[in-house]
Image (cartoon, rainbow, N blue to C red):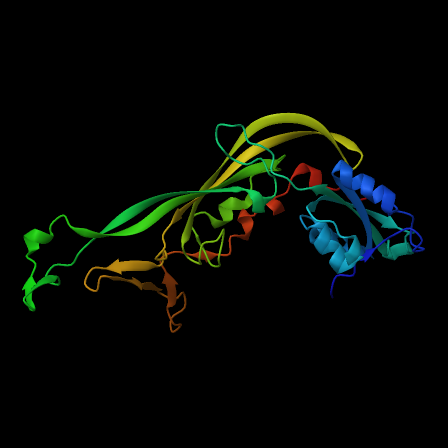
Length: 302
């Protein structure tokens, strides 16, 4: 069943929520916008997830008046409440979703680390440190030409020589706030990306782990009518980058990389072996901090 989400506005007969154009302009200047949507009660969580971290322009183009979409505003909080009265034992039939949009921005960092305080995962800072990996050349394979004659390079002349392939370490850093429990990054620890990620092709990034450090900036913010303490945390996702792909191994005899496999014996006699590669692949969705749970996203249901 597809999501049914209706933008509620003044005069719709469904509620008096949306501000007039003057109030909308005033909200825009303040850096915050509020929109209300109506959906079936059974789809309230799906609707909330569709709104969270989406831009105001995309949401209005999909569920409202595209002409009223405003750029550079992103939904950072959604709460819901019952719409109308309960229908006996079947409970409420509709829900109002109140979405708060804030103007996206990258605030200045601390001047030392050079890392961005922008909370949008798409605006974090990417750092790359390049290096090289030396691969030993195979003996009895290499030669040089002298008057079109092949002169084989002796074993002792190849000692200590090799071919350098570029590698690197990659970190992606930004600010998150009020994380509830550990981020789900452990789900992809030691795995490689199955699809393009952060501009790198599939299988080029090996996830090594993350660091999460409190940077303070303690403050009180009103969320869903409640005053809550908010703290910022600096997070860095760390990877090892291998342009040739982590499931490809250098074969000296051919001076090239080849994908390698291993057959795991089956659990049941007669079944074919399980074919595995060197590294497990994952889509890395759990690394997107925009979808980590934080305190200001928690809503207690009745």
